[in-house]
Length: 129
Image 1 (cartoon, helix red, strand yellow):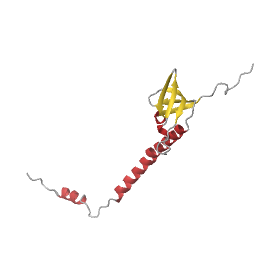
Image 2 (cartoon, rainbow, N blue to C red):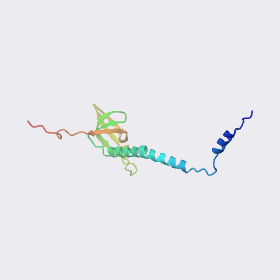
Image 3 (spheres, rainbow, N blue to C red):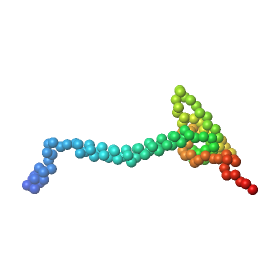
Image 4 (cartoon, helix red, strand yellow):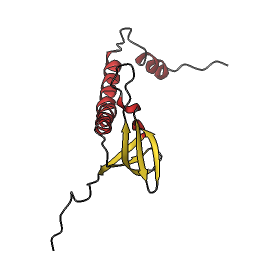
């Protein structure tokens, strides 16, 4: 079965034919713009947030109230720092936290959030009679 070729169909087919010198530069430019937008809207803020979290974990001290990745809320009682191969990777250190009447040992890197430090008794506001 043959399809009849009309002059209009022939004109449309010739109008849509490639001109021979098609360029990929507009497509490459569009992809570069999309990648740039993704970098500045998603990747860069995530890297900044991760660095802030690591800095906060390195500054962790006794008495800070923390939340672990598992959702356990507790107060830091002891930090055991380990030196591996002379490196300063302090996210593998073990942190002992006290939650209610229990003491739990977790890795420093598994602490999801630092709620804040607690003040020692008598260090807060004083009451005068």
